Length: 104
Image (spheres, rainbow, N blue to C red):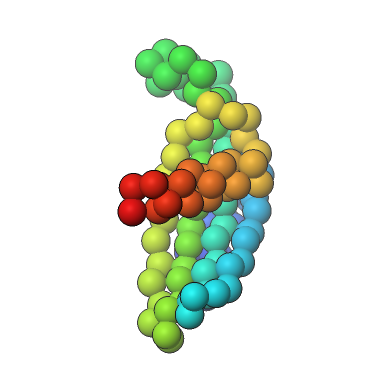
C-alpha cells in the first residue's frame, strides 16, 4: 500500500532506529501510518546547537484510501523526546487531533 515502504526499510536497516505502524479505519477512509524515529548522534552537534533539546528526527509515511482514491505523503519532524517511534507517533497524532478540534 505504501510505495516508500521497501526503500525505507532498506535505508533504515543500516541505521539505529525505532519503528511503529498504525492503522485507522472509519469515516469512509482507511489510513496506514508508519513512523520511523532516529536518534541524533554526537556528530550532529553543530546542527543541534540551535535546537537546545533536540534528540531525534522522525518521519511519518502515511497512505490514505478514501473511496478507493489513494493518497500518500511523508512528513518529517524534529523532536525533543528520545527516539521512540511509538511515543512520537502518538504525540503527533494527538497534536493533529487538537488542531482539527480547536482550529477547524
